[in-house]
Image (cartoon, rainbow, N blue to C red):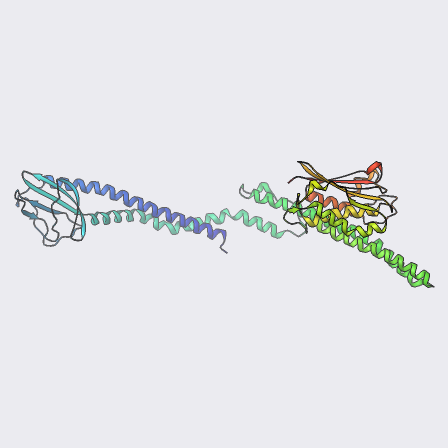
Length: 437
């Protein structure tokens, strides 16, 4: 791939050469026009001032060069050719007095015919001689410019190199930085042309710094949260090893399976949160049938709800949401709906109810998941969106990541998430409002 300097050098030199050639063409046509006017005037002067007698006319030449001389012809009153300046070029007389263009002797001639006292005097000059003269004059005018092209190339190369120096310094400054040095660049010290690039780099560095900070915090929190279930697994395994009879051993293994399920759930939630916060699952927006997606999520959890006697379903307002109604990431929305349903089922007592409602207006599409479980105290409804936060007094286990993931997916879709009391003041109702496309 060519360097910027070579591209600029080639482009500027090519442009200069093209302009020089265009200027040469313009000079050629201008010189040809001016010379035609001058030579036409000379032809007329010669035709009107030359004597018609043999004594006053120039000596006849056997061979003439059309580029260096004119052809003079004189006809008497009877139409007989009485004189011609050269026998190499015999031209017919023009049809009428004045200027004319004739063809003869494999060339084109510009002639002027004058009638003087019954005699006719015609003076002719080769058109090719005029064109060649104009070309020589135009070439002589362009030669200094053509000779200056190498010097101009050197100057352009030096000037372009000097102009690219700030870019080189910027690249060197970035190359000297350590991976942890994400401080903004000095935008004020850059030329105006580089400031948009530096501003974009500063924005990228800021986002990278935020991403790395979030990643470090996430890893630290994940390590802290994983320590507890792993320690519990180890203790439960030791209890199973110390069991003295089958009843104690079976109870210990039952607890061990529960602890293992919690650890697996926590790891799955950690992976989901990492993908969402790292934008690994980001994809181009596509039409999504939110109603069909919710039905699929409910179907996946139907057995779990039935085993506990929980009434799980969609409130019958789906007629307004037939077909794709939302533009977004289907995988992310499936994670959002799934986490809302998992939380509702986990904190709803057996025999309870979990309702999913979807409505739409001209401005937004609303998804609501309501349960009649233990709910969340108003003072904690904002904090539960923080990673690994779990409210006090909850007997059910959880990872503390579900609502954090829900908000992350909602933010990616420019949606808002609010928490309110459930139906009849019991439980919890989560409302997600998606703006219309």
